[in-house]
Image (cartoon, rainbow, N blue to C red):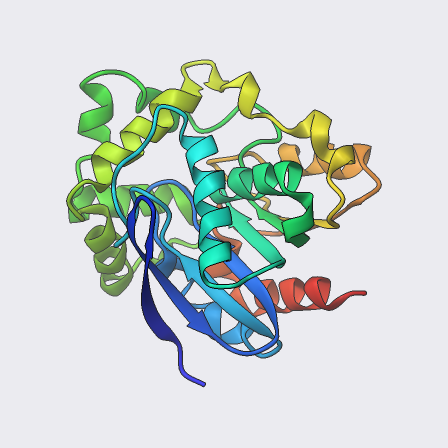
Length: 275
């Protein structure tokens, strides 16, 4: 069964997502400034025993661009509406970075809609994050940092990936194309400026104290060399909470799903299949 690109109309506007496979719903949630196509190494592999959905969040990819003054609340409502409209009652959620924070918020606020929770290099566990993200909150500097060019895209990928040999022209072009979509940069800045400061992530966006309340089993997947969200976030959570499993990818950055796709897919499939 081939992957299909689909469009759906939600209350905020048009939304793009990719779909592939049969079985229990598994929703892939990308990070800030990214898009659903970022999961291109994972959709097919994960679709062997799941119906995989990879969706562009508001302000990203080909989805509508309007961002509210409370982006996380907007994103939670967006995901629940998306699941309702395409008839997903309950799903496993796989979230990278900001997508992990969103998945955490959904699992906490709507526990009946989440069966398993996979957090990859996730925001939302502690406050310290990469300094360039903090600098993006500053006027003018943020606009300069986020200017979408192939050169800035290559520089960004050097921060994200440990294995820089993966930074080839086709990958740079793919990331550059969704970064330069009209409205995406403004949306990204609006989101980060409501939840991040020079001190790091806003305390209201940290869910570490709510982890025990989340009913869904949790798997943390992290790169040992993650420069965006440090690995000690995962180590701290796994040490202090019994309902959490974790796996650390050695010699790996912020995107294990791209640096070690086969191992990533296998870990996610096995975890989501557990009874």
